[in-house]
Length: 159
View 1: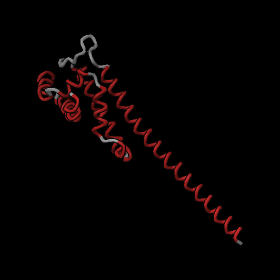
View 2: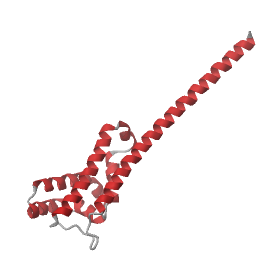
View 3: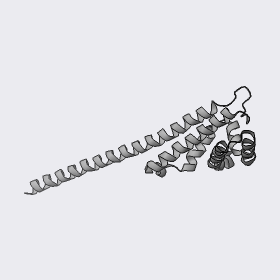
View 4: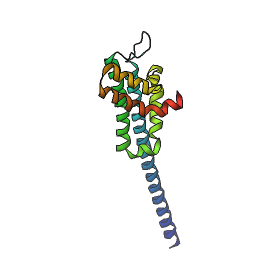
């Protein structure tokens, strides 16, 4: 009788160990998935930063305010990156557990070429006024103000 009771306890103990190992495996799988989703978002932001950097006039590394196409394309990529990040944060609650929106914006901002950082950060009101007076395009001006507003904290932090 004692031997049968002893064997029953061992069986229960082994069964509990199996359940614990299964629970640990599920937790590890969830953590891995969340980490991969975080990396996906950061990679998408990195690709958008590269796209934006490729729009600079590489002969003199500047953004020409009179070049409507260049300004429009840069702002379009900046806004798309911000919207992609916001979409992921709104639809994937677990990303908010890992990092803040501002930290993602900071990482995106740091991958931008210095001339783009200056363009959206330094003297943003002056540049918005210049864009409005040169191109007389409210949509372009609104895009600039949106991009500048979203990246302003990063500019203040990193310059």
